[in-house]
Length: 66
Image 1 (cartoon, one colour):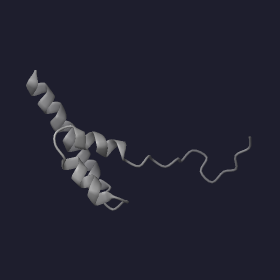
Image 2 (cartoon, helix red, strand yellow; image 1 turned 180 degrees about the vertical axis):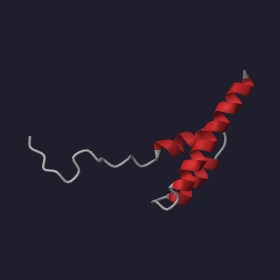
Image 3 (cartoon, one colour; image 1 turned 120 degrees about the vertical axis):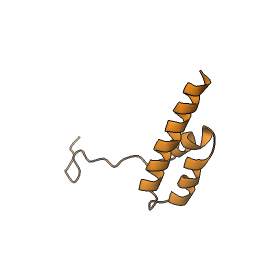
Image 4 (spheres, rainbow, N blue to C red; image 1 turned 45 degrees about the vertical axis):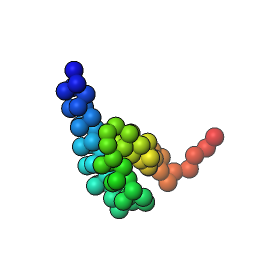
């Protein structure tokens, strides 16, 4: 059972590291790369919680009437 947890945490670190390297040029990029490496489980969780939300593309540049 411990091997399953180890594999899942390893996969989480790999995804966090790949995403951190892709978005290294954004604000706080270097700090977030360090968080992706931070062991064991806390680093990737904080990394994904501090991740900037995606931009809204729906009705971008359109007038909205309420």
